[in-house]
Image 1 (tube, rainbow, N blue to C red):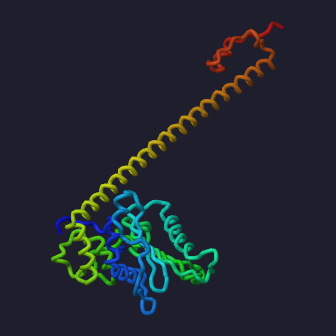
Image 2 (cartoon, rainbow, N blue to C red):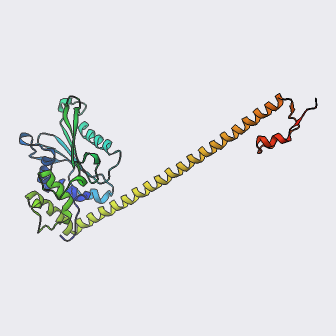
Length: 308
């Protein structure tokens, strides 16, 4: 290829699995990740938001996903996420619920609802402790291992935890190998793992972005947009850190001021108690000039007793 093309860049990824000409790749990918087989196997899909290069040209920060439904009306959402953050699980569930909720109208019935599969490809791991590249979530009771419903299916593919140098055991791993290594491959000299009809077709999509000037310029614009976004996010994080440090300094200053105030109040109470004690002993304190800054033992030197 003339230029290296990274398949996880949003416009390339959408062209790979979200275009009509690659619909067979989408079917292959969905069957691989979901594990659907036999009567449940996906044989046809309708892409609900097909690839359109204008969405990338007009909106540099667009959220790119692929939505489809198969022959039995199951819904599928695929999204690639380069940045992982604390609120991402909430976003994943929210997006799933939006698609699930959209199936039914006011005149509809709950029986019309069909399973919704969300597949998220994460460049950075969300669950490092799991030490697994493929996590599958559903709704079930942990104590009794009873599933409430099979309608919620969320798959996380953690790219960085997949070892592309191991022996490839299934089609999911073949796709993950492609997503991690295709950028560095020569379409005329592919490794055995990429010598299937689906992988060759996927490589041809990358070649189109590499050789076609319009597509390559679009690819470069998306790279530039991501760099700009990364820079902006870094600036935001740095500003947040500065604000955090400034707030910490302010809190420390307030604590110091409060400590000084308490010390002064303590000295004042000690002075009042000292003067009260002198008065009780019959010492004339009206004519005594006490320096507020002097400690009590120095002040005592200025005291004079009343003549009896």
